[in-house]
Structure formats: structure tokens, C-alpha cells
Length: 263
Image (tube, rainbow, N blue to C red; front, top):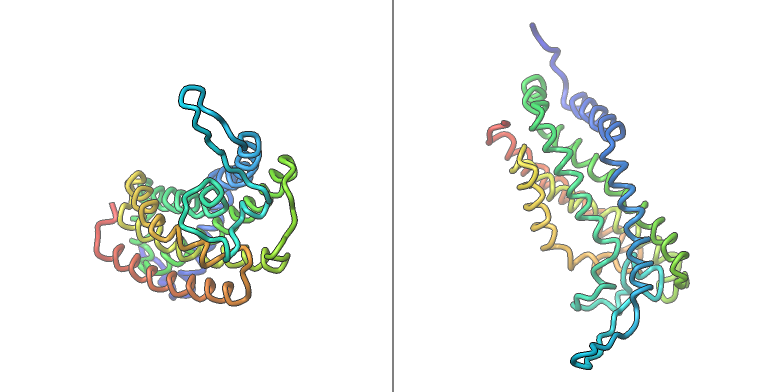
């Protein structure tokens, strides 16, 4: 029994076709998209309900609970207002989607190794860069879908909570550029998650822990790179950064898959 040898371009096309079919026929992407849609609604509504100052009856100390005053605060922060403070407004925003995308990539790749699909695939089609490229592109597409769902959810949540929709200093163009920057930044994180998933292989718990740990190292840089008042330069920077990271870390993932056992 022999298998027809594919060219590298054919291998990439074949893997993309298989992965995107799997992605849109599995419930995982729809669950993740649903979580991304509901998350901002809950965040905006709950923080609006809890906002205010509370007094401890025993100590008499006052505690102020911060909340969002504008819908677009759940998307990003103005470049002039970025700080290192760890408050609810700076932490509970659309940037959480990058970690959700990490969970998606880890589950998507771990299933290949747990089911034996990856071992059979590499026996027939040993060109591993095609596998890594396909997984990276599928992860990018899934992450972009989740970001868009969060944006829609923020609009719904802001309307329910009665928050302001004024664009302010960012302007409508700044908000659009901000979203484009965040979407183009997604390959940076997806390529990192792909490396971690390649290291852990069938051990899903390990790949998620490694991915979340690595993602935290870059998390605080996201508001600086993709502020609410982003411009064309931010978009281009994120686009080139995403391509470079995807290419460089994609090569690392391929090297890892070539050097280690696939079981």
C-alpha cells in the first residue's frame, strides 16, 4: 500500500481544509464564541450594579467599588490613561479573550494527540510545518471570531447597563483601529500557545498551564500596543508583529514536533 506524495503547498491546503472543517463542525468554537458574547454582558451589568462606596460596620472603613462609565472601556484604554494599576476596569476587558483563545488552541491540538490522529497524520504526511501553519491560522480565525463576539457583547451589555457610548477622545476611527490591532495581535499569542501545545501534546492540563503562564508575560503590554485611540501605525505594528511571531514560533513548534515523540 502506498500513499501519493503531496507537494508542500498541497499539504498546507489539505491541512487547512481539514482543520477548518473540524473547527466549524465541533461544538468547541461555538461554546467559546458564546462565552465571549456573554462575558462582557455579565461584566458590565454586574459591575454597574455593584458600583459605589460601601462602609464596613465594624471598622468604619469605606471601600469604593469601581465600575465602567463608558462601554468602550471594556474594549481598551486610552493611551493617555494606561497605568500599571490592577483594577477591575483595566483587567476585565476584551484582552481576556487572548487567554480564551489559548484554551481553544490547547484543546484543539491536544485532541489530535489524544486520539492518535496526529501520529497517523505525520506517518502519511510528515511535513510538520503544514500542520503548525494550519493550527496557527485556525487559532487566529477562532480568536478573531471571539474578539468580534466580545465586541458585540460589550455593546449589548453597555445598553443593558445604561452606559455611555460616546467615543470621546478615541473617536470612531480609533475604536475601529483598536479592534483591528487586537485582531492582528492574535497570531502573536496563538503562536505562543501552539508552541506550548506542541510541548505538552496530549497533556491538556499542562498545555493550558504553560499557555496561560506565557500569555501573562505579555498581557500587560496589550493595552500599550492596542490602546483605544489606536491609529494606522498600531495596526501595521500588530500585523507585522503577528506575522513575525507566527513565522518564528511556527518554526520552533515544527522543530519540537520533529524532535520529540508524538505519543
